[in-house]
Image (tube, rainbow, N blue to C red; front, top):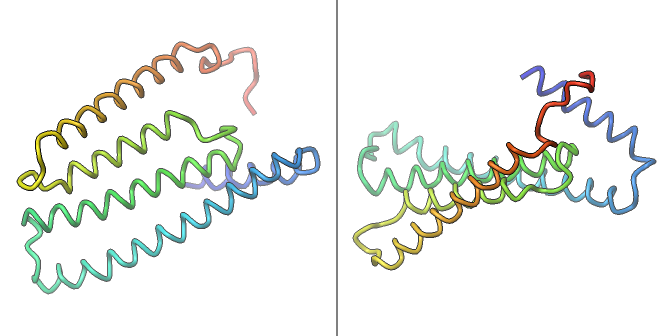
Length: 169
């Protein structure tokens, strides 16, 4: 945790130092990424508070059977929504801290896979037709293959290989 804080502090110092050297568009990207990150963080906090306010009293009071199918779907649907939002925020932060110049395609595909996983969790099998389930399964398969191909490409790319001739900072 301390290492994360020091790396974030270092990244902000680097941004402050490089600010005069940035083009107007690079500055615009930084401001937009930080604003989006803040907005998503606020949404995550509000969603978490609502989740706690709605679910905790029901669980403590015993009004809800946590193992009930509908309760399980609803609860884990809410949790997955928060996880998706946190991954989305994480990708924005990486761009804002210039660890990546733009939001990476792999990250977008990963978020889409998380959203499809959430859909499968909350899906009411009895009320869903076979074509919808097949379409969701097909989309999941295709996104999984694309993610795997992108990972394979990145693993083989010389840019992803460690540079032994460059000393660490």
